[in-house]
Image 1 (cartoon, rainbow, N blue to C red):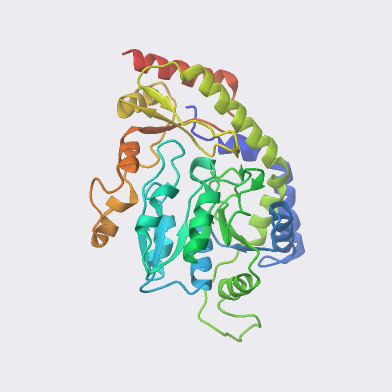
Image 2: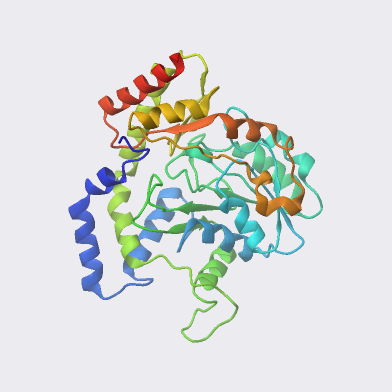
Length: 367
């Protein structure tokens, strides 16, 4: 089997370094909010050029905590994309606010800024653009609209660590940004993890309070909070992986360019264009296919893993039925959900394996 992402090879390449890092944590006796967490937060803030990096339990909590820190809740609306993982909208609903779905651009697959203003109401408090698959959203235009209406902008950068927009790193493009360290992410750990980055001092202080049961002094609690802390072992693993992330992302980009070169001539297949002023880090490499399911089945029969991201747009999910979303509301997202297929890409995908994937796609389209 050629996996979609080969985590065994990726973490295996650093096996001894990771084991040494874990052993160091065990020997230290500090397991929660210890020196490794502090070191990771410092390095993340420095890398992204922000004042604060606050680690949390996962990417979903990161989104929830930013929204709560800014007082967003019942009666408020937050605009986001229907073409993303559920957590982007779930975090909004979790606080009693209402997600409002705006369709995506057919080339970037990201929130279409030209459709934003039509969905802004007096209840709108924030916009959550998602840098889907590792390509940054059109942040300059989104921020311009947000300033016009005095709206908060939160980057959902969970799939985009290491990407950049016109020379600026993702994570430094809005009021706050949220990253996930789920194992399959470009920078991941052996479990769950997340981080919020921001230049907002008050927001950062509130998130630090909320992540630790609403407490800054043990056994004294100022607000109802959460237990949302990044474990010291995960911080140690992330610090071990961090020096390799740029090399890994460059390998992904090289593989993506090779896919582009080898597949672009095929009928019934379309490849997302890459904008020259954006640094796409290819968390996923997805192709559009006229006969997506048939190609997926053909790849599976040849031992090649592929996956559909995402089979149903969020506005059509059962859980959001009460919001009144219907077929035709977001036609681009709906069309892509029927056409798109992610194929293997990871820093440890070998060229001969990629050739097998390419050959299998070619043959499946000839049938």
